[in-house]
Length: 477
Ligand code: NAD
Image 1 (spheres, rainbow, N blue to C red):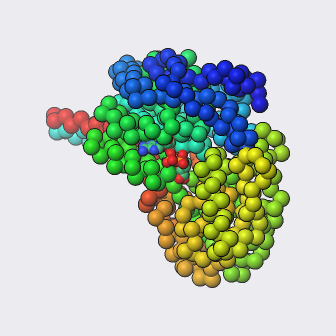
Image 2 (tube, rainbow, N blue to C red; image 1 turned 30 degrees about the vertical axis):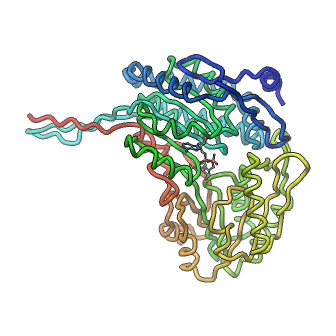
Image 3 (cartoon, helix red, strand yellow; image 1 turned 180 degrees about the horizontal axis):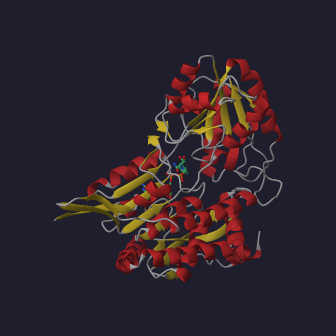
């Protein structure tokens, strides 16, 4: 563990950010390193009064922030990106300590967070002339909404925060950020940077133990909720904003299918499918969560995936050899073990299925074959390193089975004939479908879940406009 983080452990220095001040919480709670089960920090815990103070600060900062020119907000966002980049090693180590992912992946997430801020800083909200005639001029402006609540989960705490904070700020909104209680530290550290770079109140950071979400989403002074998390919580958030009709973006769970067409080179696609399922120990909303393979290639693909699972290196993310870290928290670890127990009864585990060591929430990459479509592992979102491989003989049937889900986040199609795969992609009911690639998520391309995987979009111009009100000015001539 790096020295700066050890210092924090010895004398907890993590602070909430409220109105430009780094302040202690009303109480504290422990943050656990999932690889060691050791307490790494006492995290400040905000109470309802601190939440109110954070929202009040954001509300007070809004008039001045929204009045700044786009060029000035862009300049400050770029300064924020520079400040984050300058401390990227410290952020990456802290991210591995609290989240568990391999250090190289944590560094990638921080680099992605910097890139996210820079991408939005370069974007624009042009005024659009919708009609220009002799008798009328109709113009569309994009105006900021006010205070944005940015609520994030524990799998990618930094990148998912920036997807919200950067466009919200560029559009002229102010922010109250609330991370997940098991990965709050990087968001608090980001608060330190915001305190240095931004005017007081522009960004505020509070942390909770899953108890302040409703107070934030129902708060009368919050104009928009940008939420990433589970579908179950997303439904509660949707209900909670109804009384104030807040603007809302929901990025929720997924159960993405990979459809492998009968013409693939199995040895070539197997590693892509494996890493697409197991990245971040399977804790990716867009991870491959079910694989449909043609009869003719079922045996070969199962055996290739099993080989990859058997040789995978699972361990502490601080070890440079590690490919897959632990599950992020005890409750997710127990949940994934439950999926494995059920899969053992309903199907055949051909690799993994075991925990490792006597400390840490480690589960080896697990491949399950010959499991029926109604098994939990096929129907539900496992959000862990356990992949069911399902057989099909008729492509229409495979597509129907892939679509037979309440989720509709992503999906992949694998084929040596991209045009054929493209036609299949068009028939998948989800917001994003990749062909012969996976998890390519350019920040300038919109990302939106279909069905119960979300509402609204993040990223791209659409993702930026979600933080604005379209204002039409209609002038008679
Ligand atoms: P979660 O829903 O338990 O928590 C997400 C956030 O919501 C946390 O900050 C939590 O404290 C907060 N929260 C809890 N109760 C709340 C309430 N009543 N009101 C408002 N906020 C509340 O999700 P999680 O377990 O942290 O994350 C895993 C889930 O997130 C998975 O389902 C995954 O697929 C999903 N996810 C989706 C995307 C996407 O972009 N679609 C990305 C990453 C993760």
